[in-house]
Amino acid sequence: MSTSPNDAFSLIYANTKMLVLNKPHDVAMDTPNEKKTTTTGGAPESVVVPSTDVEKPTVESWCLQHLSQVGLLDVTQCALQKEGKMKKQVKFVHQLDYATSGVLVVGLDKRASATLSFCFQSRKNCCKMYSAYLLGHLTESAAVERYAANRSPITFRGVMDDFTAEALAGVTRGVYVCPILQEGPNPPFTFFSHIPTSEEGTLYTDDTEREETTSCESNTVLSICLPITHDDEDAFKMKVCEAEGGGPVGRAALTHLQVVRRGYIHLPDQEKAVPVTLVRLYPRTGRRHQLRVHCAALGHPILGDVCYTTASLFPEVDTAAFPRMYLHAERLRLPVDVVQLEHSSKEETDRARKRRRRLVKGIEVSEDDDDHCRFSEFIAKRNNFPPMVPQEG
Image (cartoon, rainbow, N blue to C red; front, top):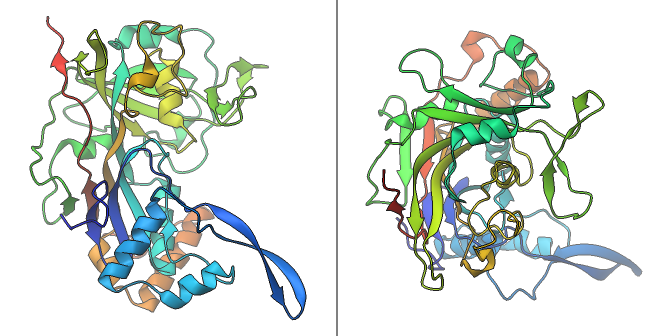
C-alpha cells in the first residue's frame, strides 16, 4: 500500500496512465467550478474554471496532490485549465456517490481513459461488488413477495452478460430468487468466488491483512429487476417507478444481491443493538443511486442512508445518528491488463479504439481481433464498518 497525502485515502494501484484508489466516504469527486470573466482581445468572456475556495479535499484535489508528489503533474495543463483553455488532467472513467467509499479508477491519459471508460460503458466482463449493511433482517421470501404482483415486461439496452438475447424479451419487473449453480452458467459475479491465477489476471489490493472468504448464509441470490426514474418530488432523489399503461416507465435496472449474514451492530450513541444484514451487491446496470433505491425498495434501506430511509420503515432507528452510509465498493474486475495498457503503443490503442466502435455499432468482431488479455482486479479495504454480532439460531 502506498503512502497517501491524506490519511483517509489509500492508493491501490498506480502507473503513468491511471490511478486506482480507495475513496473515503463523504468525499466529493470533482473540485467545484466557478465562473470567471476573462478578457481576450479586449472582449470580456465568461469561462468555467475550478474553484479555489475549497475547504474539504475532493478526489480530484487528492489525485493532483499525488501526481505532484510523484512528479507526474502537468503544470502547464493545470495552468491552462484554470484559465478555462484546457480539460482536466484527472479524468473520471466512472463515478461513486459522495457518501460511498471504495474502489475508484481515474484515468490520466486520453487514450487509456477511453479504454477504461468503455469497460464500464459496455459492462461486458466488467464486474463490481459492493458490501453494505442493510437495516433489518432481510428475508428472500418477503423481498420476492413484495413485488410478486403487477409484473410487466422490461426492455434492456446495451450489453448484458446475465441474459441471452432471447431471454431478454421475457424479463419482467420484479424480484427473483436464483440458485448459484455448482456447474453451468452463473451470473458474472461468480467470477469473484476465487482468487485469480497468474494466467487469468492480477489482483491488486490495499488490504494486506485481508482473508479471502466466500461463506454466505445463502447459496442463492436475489435478482432485483426494478426500473428507476427521477423522483418528481425531490430533484436529487430517484425512485422505483410503478408500471403504468401496460408497461413500466423509467430505465431498466438490474441488481444482484447476496446475503452474507444477519446480525446486530452496537454503536456508542445507540442505546439498543441495531438489526442489520450484511450483503454483497452486484449492479449490472449503472443507474443513478441504483443500489440505494433497490435496497430501499425491498424495505431494507442501506444503514445510514438519510436520503432513502423513511421513518415509517424503522421508526425506532435514528438514521442521522450513524457516522456514514454503509455502502462500500469493495471489488472491481476490468477486462484489461493495466500493465499492458500503460505500455500500449499508439497503433495498439488505435486498433482498440476501432474495435470499440465496431462493438458499439453492433458489427461482429472477428475472433482474431477479440481481446484475450488478462484481467485486472482491485480490492479496497472496508473501513469504518462496525463489527457485527451474528444472529442466533
